[in-house]
Amino acid sequence: MTETDSPLRMLIVEDSEDDAMLLLRELRKGGIDPYSEMVDSEDRLRRSLREGKWDILITDHNMPGFSSFRVLELAKQYSADLPVIIVSGTIGEGVAVTAMKAGAQDYIMKDNLSRLIPAINREVREGTVRKAKRVAETTLEYMAFHDSLTGLVNRREFERRLKMALDDTHHRGGQHVLLYLDLDQFKIVNDTCGHIAGDHLLKQLATVLSKHIRSNDTLARLGGDEFGILLHGCDGFYARKVAKKLCEEVREFRFVWQKKPFAITLSIGMVLISNEYAKAKASELLSHADLACYAAKDRGRDNVQLYQSSDQDMQQRRNDMHWTSRIQQALENDNFCLWKQDIVALQPEAADGYRTEFLVRLQEENEIIPPGAFIPAAERFGLMTKIDRKVIEMAFRYLDRTGLGRERTGTFFVNLSGSSFNDPELFLYISELADRHDLNPERVCFEITETSAIANLDVTQQFISFSKTRGFKFALDDFGAGMSSFSYLKALQVDYLKVDGGFVRNLLTDPIDLGIVDACNRIGHAAGLKTVAEFVETDEIRDRLVELGLDYAQGYGISRPKPLN
Image 1 (spheres, rainbow, N blue to C red):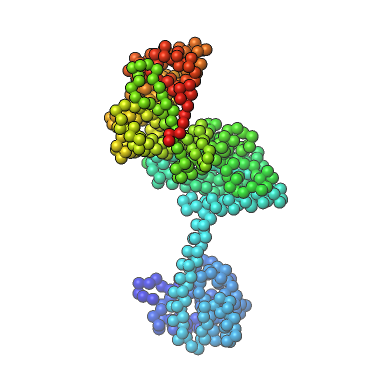
Image 2 (cartoon, rainbow, N blue to C red):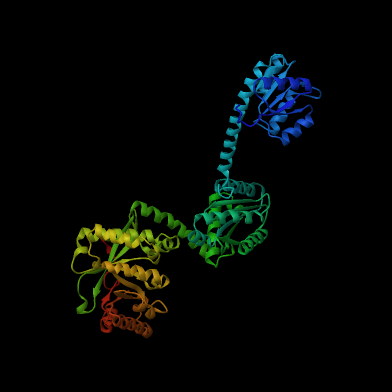
């Protein structure tokens, strides 16, 4: 030990004060001046081990009432890493070997203390290593089963306990309930204040939630802003009371970050762990609880929803989740393909080039899946921006390969979802892609539905403005479906109005639909726009649209969708 080291803390178990003083004198002669405490009974030894932090324990072998073997037991009980050296005048070779097997690090005879200092230095050093190793192992074991941010049980351990609850229900008829919790405003905190604020919110909420569950229940962080609670030995009535109480507590909780307060609420999905799940896995329980949680969100948030397999919303949600993985796989494997549906001129002056709309399809082996099957799931789970980018890429590649994107005439319509307008890098992506394929932007017309445009009016205006500086055109799809179509038309710099097909289909039999189509066409022309009628399915409808003066028609009566290639 050096002069700058803290004093060695030594606990001496000895019934002879003279022998203890002799031992300390020997240490001082060798340059070790420890802080020491001498105990001579089991009770005092217990108290010293419990209250003090010792670097080494030196013990005699035979003492009144207890021996070194008892000392070793107590040392292991109170401080597993504490090195123990037996210093005795009466210990025999066989007893010494037994003591070493029981946990002693060394034994030294009192009449030969020359080995004492080297033994102490060695064992203190190795004891420190053992302690560090044990702490590391304990930390790793803790991390394997706990969330590093909140200290709660992690998903892996939670699933293991769910499996145990399932087994208990199946074999012993136990009653348990799973709660799946999701924060309703977490994204707002993260987006406005950053991830550090989000982490603080999660830690604070973990504390709030912990106060309202029993010691035999399990609270876990499942990932992101999602928590799980396993309520042991309770029925649905009690579980709903707990869930509602949690919603109430979180509702009343106020998170403050840099003097800015945030109101937070919970949506909770609840699953009764019954014999219905006898052969289920923990992942199925969590999936059903997740479905119920999203149903709670869809029905207004800040509430509790019990999973019921007969619930149509939950069935739809489950179907959407199934589609999500298929969409992700299709994006990774380039399983999307383009079809097209031609648009024809109804008026002689409108016949200025070829027009068609690109339509996305999903191809799985020999099956072609229409967009109506997967688009709702893509919209719900935030995948439409990725699909839009894939469609743009395929369309631009086709226009480059065929040369149609560099012709003097022609218009090629490409659909964009409303969510894509919130992608700040989309305009740059489109511009770079057009330059890479050497396209004339005037040949491309992006479509957005009227309802999406209105819902994101500011960002839509900005995106259209930027895009039109490059020469791209825009069409407002499903026009007339909104309640304020005409008033919003002034705010959007579009080139085409595509009249909602729901009005076009029945215009021969419904005078109101006829009037709406006529009004859309007149307003569009007054604004200097070209009009396109959708869902044109018969020659009679086409002829009536010609009379009304619409510029273009699209639908099964004009041209059916067909593969691009």
